[in-house]
Image (cartoon, rainbow, N blue to C red):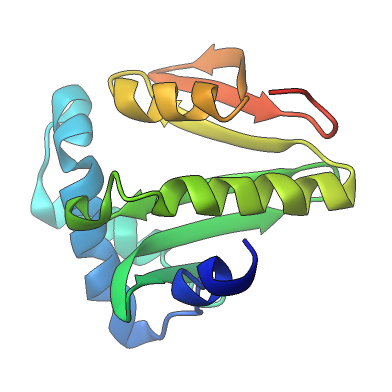
Amino acid sequence: MGGADAERNRPAPPTAADSDFCFQVHRAALGEHVAAIWGWDDEIQRGYHDRAFVPGRWRVITADGADAGLLVVEYRSAEVCLGRIELDPRYQSRGIGGRLIRWLIGVAAERGQPLVLEVLMVNTRAHAFCLRHGFRETGRHGRKILLARTPGQED
């Protein structure tokens, strides 16, 4: 992301106090998809969240001065893994996710590494979003589709 886009949607490290915000975004953005596969139990999902939430690895996405979502990226030795990109539904379809994914594609390309991620099979909107941004399906595991975009790959 460059210039004004980078400033407007800068992913910032959350604090422990941001944990509830991140959980609420997860519920709003992916709750229906999780429920379609496993059912949604707030207590169980909160437990998963509490175990996964690591402030140093998670980032809060802001848009127009407000917290809008979350981003989790893991820089591995052979790849960049997008663990989560979740936007509150009020901030979806505004180009924020596209700007973030293009930025991450650039980061991975600079590192000479593929950008990899997984989407739930029932989340057809996320799958289509990834395909529009040049990701290719590399496999399936359980109820997830594995996707990758390699450096230098044409759209």
